Image 1 (cartoon, helix red, strand yellow):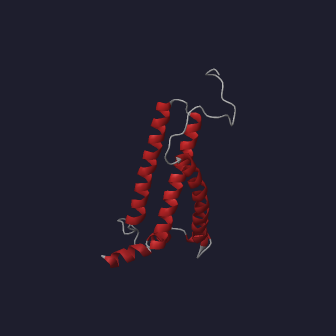
Image 2: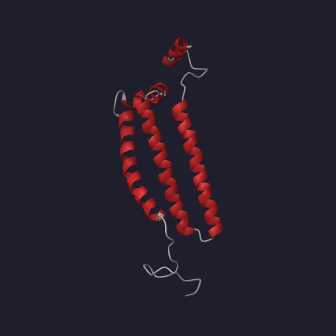
Image 3: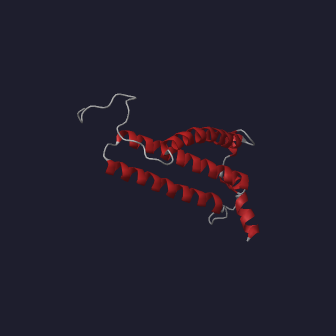
Length: 152
């Protein structure tokens, strides 16, 4: 077989898989499980934001601040953040593995993908757990402004 042709689908691979955990299998399983969990988390998030209370007209800074003050919603949002980034990065890793032929370029792209995902997960988690609505320059008419003045 020349370098310009591809092996027939389902033909036996020339290389033998090394022993140890089958990371591709676990990646495949993770994609299915995380996809189902993401559907539940996303639709729960949308329902709480758009259907409960004042609906879409009630979405403002105070609404988000109130949600992020509740540990349930903090963990809900963090679970959604982590699963979405890991799910998406694993999908991008699969695409890179399928289409990038140079092993060095593939390695650089995959390491970059996971590094960016890790950075975004860390920053997003920090935002959720350290969010403080009492920032300067809130208008005096804001309910949060009054609450923050009373706080300290």
